[in-house]
Image (cartoon, rainbow, N blue to C red; front, side, top):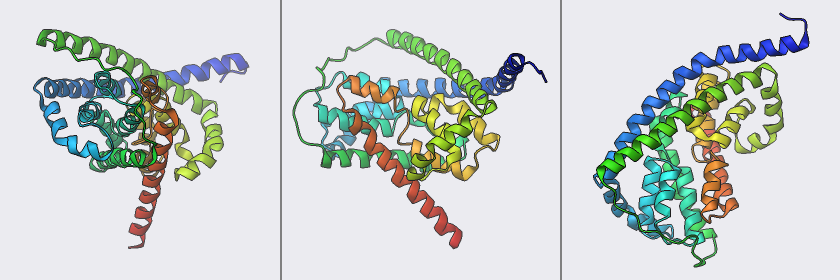
Length: 313
């Protein structure tokens, strides 16, 4: 070990990178394969009109939450793909600010379902339960806002009619967008894994745990989940996968704590980029955030009660 403080610091930074890089590449490769397969499958569903057919079947349900039937197509696109896919459909609809905000809460609760559920399953939670929690969270959030938000008719954004594209163009756009996504995912997964090791090496994670303990206590979450909570809120489940999986596999956070965290971040994650995307389309920021935090808190405390009752039986 070096005695010079500068050399010692550089050594610790290098050690953090050397220990994080191999695992990050392994997780990135798993994520990339999963993303390509899911993306290709969803594109096929969309091309053959299956998602459009499903949206027609769901139209009556969406009227219960104060949304026009065609909004179900945006929700399903987000459910199977991501927030960007949902917003691409939103741009073709004439929604009021109220309607856009309700739809935004539903999409933010339940989007990119296949990939993000795979991440949560790999960290120890039940895939079926996570799908149920996030889908129920979306419906509860839609109903809650429909009951609470004042009615208005101001349009959030002008609609633009979608253009029909030939198969060759769709294939090229898929290749281009998937390539960009893979590059972004690889960069973020490796970078986040390195950042996590670096923060742990210099004791920053322990400090974050102390600072966030009061807020996490209200949410029903253990203080040990503080760093993963930050990662999920800033970058989401897909991009934060490497850190979540590594922390779980290393035993730094036990299975029960991660499961509680998954019940929270399933409906309340990516609260910077994805939330601001809906705000840029006209959604109302606090209405998009606070109901999801409330729903997430209820799911966590219900899970804690359920686990406690199981231990007594």
